[in-house]
Image 1 (spheres, helix red, strand yellow):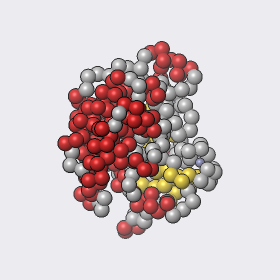
Image 2 (cartoon, protein in one colour; image 1 turned 135 degrees about the vertical axis):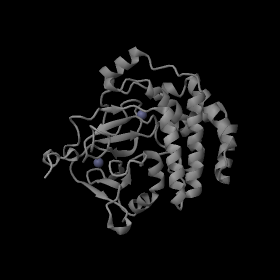
Image 3 (cartoon, helix red, strand yellow; image 1 turned 120 degrees about the horizontal axis):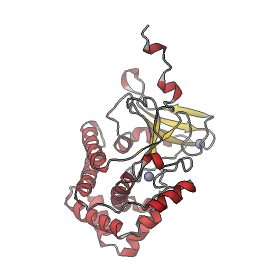
Image 4 (tube, protein in one colour; image 1 turned 180 degrees about the vertical axis):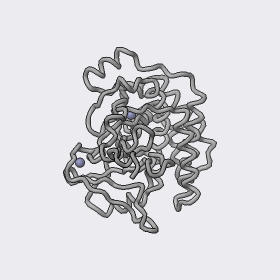
Length: 307
Ligand SMILES: [Zn+2]
Ligand SMILES: [Zn+2]
């Protein structure tokens, strides 16, 4: 028996003693890596055309990060006030009214025009580009409300993608050590909903679980067995799509019997290439499996549409 096997398994203690509360996004890397992951997943998926389209969308997000002038950080006073009141420092309602945000949306809508995309998406883009300021503001409001009208999901995808760029750039300027937990299932940077969560394999924090914000991409620490919708630690179970060869699934649904919801859990510690948003879309099979149950999906992902 080796010495290390005598140590407590970090996954059993959730890595809590070592794990930072918040991991801040690096937008320059985030969108490039996400685009690459979408491309890789498209090679073997029956969702290939859609995944390729999203890879293109995320490439445009990455280009914008490289191109836009530096964003104005959230002012220090607001950060301190938010911290005192256990509120997220990024006020998303104020954010979508800023000129910087509107410019990001406009530039994104311009750039994305050159992408090859399915006819329905191209039609939706044309409608969004023709929309007046009031309609765009309404769409931005839906995006930050984390609820999209089912009849115009394809339209909202574009506004959501532009919003992710701006929100991630703002979050990147925050000091992760100054963030405090806001409430269950709420991003401590921007107040957004998580897409799901990941068990990470980063040295020093092996086995720690992080919820991933669908808006600004901040990741925050949560204990391993806990519902991200209601906070219950009882009545939690796991479901997964059967994997060939009987191997253990690296993407599971964490289900909660207290509030009847479920959210996706990615075991990045077992497969380091997993990426929250790309693998969320590509693991649609799990969503379809869960649709047959009484559990409702709690995670929010504006890219997971049309199926
Ligand atoms: Zn966030
Ligand atoms: Zn719950």
